[in-house]
Length: 249
Image (tube, rainbow, N blue to C red; front, side, top):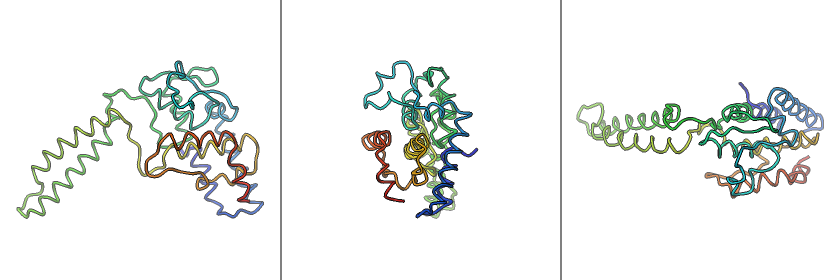
């Protein structure tokens, strides 16, 4: 299933800048239609476009950076889901309570690669990706070492044992504390800021929507930190990109 993010990105990729007046109207119309179609079946997007709320009991105690409490947005919802994932806390969208994983599924309709569902620490789903990578790398390393030794063995038993044992332990520990995401896909934080900017322009019926492309939004590489993204989200909410996008006409 195409997500709201991939649909909007496909419209951006259909027309290369600079855009003509006709292309601006065409791109803006398509994006508005995608948001409205998703909002018709997704209460989370309804809340975001309507400046509603997404919250959970005790959210104020977790709001160390002052971002979780505020109007519903894609980035804010990502952080709320991330903070409440371990406890599997139910969330409220505009006052209506939903199970955590149901809200994560609604969010997944919009942004790919988020992986914000609650999984118990013993669930196999938490470990398959990291264990597969570790075991695959162990087999390759053991085969290359055996080939270099030239003794006719397919695998080096010492590499298989020590690297396999150490790597398996590390994979189990890190997977219990974190969630695996597909490194081939974009960061959910980048995708969320992109959709937040587009949602704000959809809400205001602005033709600047056609110019709200991913390459026009700052991104942090390689590591991502709240100190970079939280002010960026506040800037989007304060309509701080209007002047910058206007210069791209």
